[in-house]
Amino acid sequence: MTDTMILHENALSGNCYKVRLTAAHLGLPLERRHYDIIAGETRTPHFLETVNANGKTPVLQVGDRFIPESNAACFYLADGSDLIPAERFARADMLHWMFFEQYSHEPNVATLRFWLAYIGEDELSDAQRAQIPGKRAGGEAALGVMDRHLAGRDFFVGTGLTLADIALYGYTHVAGEGGFDLSLYPHVEAWLARVAAQPGHVAMDA
Amino acid sequence: MTDTMILHENALSGNCYKVRLTAAHLGLPLERRHYDIIAGETRTPHFLETVNANGKTPVLQVGDRFIPESNAACFYLADGSDLIPAERFARADMLHWMFFEQYSHEPNVATLRFWLAYIGEDELSDAQRAQIPGKRAGGEAALGVMDRHLAGRDFFVGTGLTLADIALYGYTHVAGEGGFDLSLYPHVEAWLARVAAQPGHVAMDA
Image 1: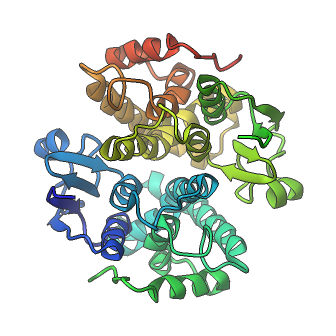
Image 2: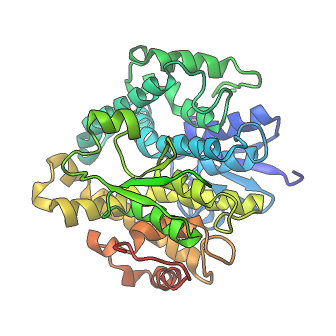
């Protein structure tokens, strides 16, 4: 891989952290460009035209090409490595957990963290406030699915760390900031410690 | 591939249709098992314990193993075929559009279709009704991103049909049922016709 790689990101975002964590496990250098999401820096005409028409971070830049969507960026970095299972069913099962993360976990766990810990409940719109109970229940359901799956397993797929673990670690390890009580999910807590103890792990604020 | 493959599904779901459309393009036979989502058939103890702990369809059963999440099931079926680009950047770019579909498109376009065309606006909860304007804006934004990307291109990634097209076709071609006016997105309309004209294409109700 000879192209310079630049991560367009926000340091507080678990989605951006996933990409940094994948790169750290692979020993790949990433330049980092910070954007203030709340100030609208990912909605400027320049960002929308050049980096991501969908106005979101992270975006992985590889030379002069761009990959939006955190889990797609992780897949690009890890393609051909042990972080993606070589066996066909296991590879699809890893993607199952990565799509679960973006559909059933992130919109609940990450959104409540952002709303409650970074925006502040008093600043939310009525439409946002009306969604809190649904997102609370959805996040608890996702954590419950994870907890039952992890009973008797060390990692989400197979016997070692894959992108499924990295994708789900991103926001699960800070779910407490969204008001989720992780002590209710002991298998998840043990897995979080296991992921954090892997060689090559870096913290979110590293 | 010698294992019998069974699709646990609901025939009205665009997510389930994606898996059938992928199998049709590949000439792979799928047995179909229907579940009535509104009647709660994907929330029974048997379904949760055996098929998908997350209580959703589609789930692709391969022998005695199960792959939830539509886009992961499509990836399993298409792994090694021309529906997944062999080149590393293009493969990640395909996944970018598949994650975009599940995060920025489906929760808006598919949810409004389900709420307005199948549940009925009068039956929605106050919390659901409060989300309609946000989901309308989110769906229009996603269709706009697609339309700008498709200007001057035939398919989402590279020069031929990939899983990115199949994933986005699933709910875009029925977006009108959710109240979206596709005539506002002429490049999307042309692409829909192009996808439907591909050899091997099957309709949602086939």
